[in-house]
Amino acid sequence: MNRQLFSLSASVAFAFLLMFSPAKTFSADVVADLSKRLVPITTGFSGTDVLLFGAIDPSDNQDKDVIVTVKGPTEGVRIRKKDRVAGVWINSNSALFKSAPGFYAAFATKPLEEIISPLELESAEIGIEQLPLKTAHGRFSPNLELEWRQALARNMETASLYRTDVGQVTMLSDQLFRTDLHLPANVPTGTYTIGFYTVKDNRVVGAQSMPLIVRKAGLGAWIYDFAHHSPALYGIICVLIAIVAGYASYIAFRRS
Image (cartoon, rainbow, N blue to C red; front, side, top):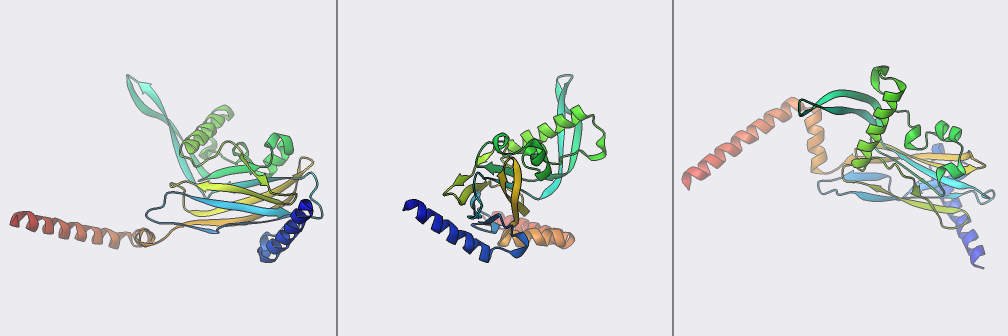
């Protein structure tokens, strides 16, 4: 009886997601959604959690696993290597990654090596090792290139922006699944890509992707936009405010 109720609820959930999911991201094998599509960054933002959930097609869901990836907006990242010279630590070399994701995390129902082939991982760019991270100008040997990639991953993991381990996707029934995504306080703004994959016999058999937007909101967003769109006027206003504040402080202390 309980299994029938689970099956019925899964079928209803699948139909509901099918009706309300955008047509351009629909896959006949998996339908998924997010608890929130927009994450506003306000002055007191200290991080947030986003629920990622979905359903596998009830008509063909045998022996399938689910993988979820979260990839942040790409940006240029420069990392530096320090060496000790004459007792002083100095920057001896640096590498620039022109298009590194500002955030990355992966989740799966089982360890990746148990459910998907290395070729499929590379093709779908699942896992930090499979990301197309390349330094600019191609001036490093393959071994040095790998060292710089590993250094980038370590730095981003230390900043809580890369998750090097694979998180857990929980199957609520034969069809329904969910996982929780935590975005830290220092999460970069921009458009994130959430990828949902169903895997069977070591192959990706279904996929869906959708955006998650992280952007500044409130007064802080207005000041940020104003400063970037009108930097000269913003600088003049800051100088005027500093002059007025300084003069007001001078008058106040003089009277006291």
